[in-house]
Length: 258
Image 1 (cartoon, helix red, strand yellow):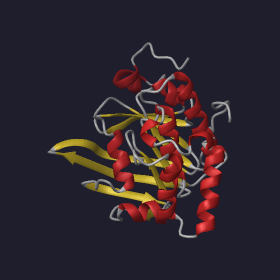
Image 2 (cartoon, rainbow, N blue to C red):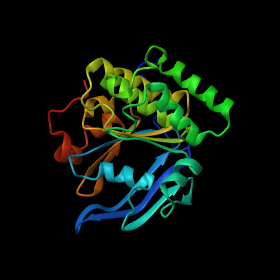
Image 3 (cartoon, rainbow, N blue to C red):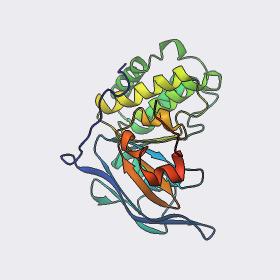
Image 4 (tube, one colour):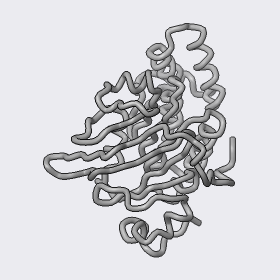
């Protein structure tokens, strides 16, 4: 597997915007979660989202996937307005993959059965489906785990399973919600390597949100910090930890990447 980013993709001007949130506002019980938020994500970029609890990170994921509708604003994928499209159409037509913080698999099915279940939903041609699943088994080194029920896998193995299930649809955009939560150091390193490889080898655009700021900043090209429903800072990992607004709202003055 690849090492964690030895380089940063410094300039995305030559790349096209694959996902845009345009003037998104969202309310829960009259409380404003997102306030006229604008965000552009470039093709094959790894973007990290940071911010305090309740700032709207998971809400952004839900709006992108179609799990929730914004009160105002638009979701544009490849320049097309997808704001009113249902979840399944975004997942299939626009190839959005989503890895939730919890669950995402069937507890009482074993690993191979979980992969086959998702494969049957997305890939109708039997031989193509078999080939795709075999590729994923090899890619994630699942051979020793195929017959183990999902509920008996370790935390890291469960996370790898859910990511692999999201990849069966060959997503162009992959959303990872708190992938590093409650995992040990070696497992986090393994997941960071998977994320970097998905960008470099599979050409996938990836959005990660997590409270483990150092772990997130080790594998992203760009990060944003959210506060009071808005993006208050955006830049490379080294830039964002020096940003005064990001320090005030999230990092504090003592935070360092290493």
